[in-house]
Image (cartoon, rainbow, N blue to C red):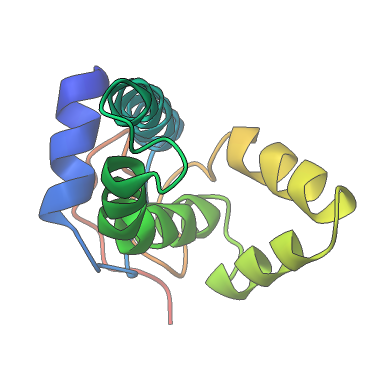
Length: 127
């Protein structure tokens, strides 16, 4: 999976919080979002909108829900509940914990959140 495929997948699953997401899908989408934010920040500054950050703000609003959704699906791949996203509210420690969770290899085979995205299993999730 490359950056374009990951970005398309995340926007096509705009608010899909169920299922699982591979590490590549998550990290490519995050990298694409950061790069677009940087470019829009530069454009905002060149247009004199740097203080307002109009374009960057609109982009942030546009990727807020897909970012939450792909984060939830990434946690599902590691067999963790999406409620773990709330740990990001803890300064520094929460972000470190989430980065470790997002970087961890997903569970092999199906888990309670769905089929393994790496193997493409069509198996039914555990209940």
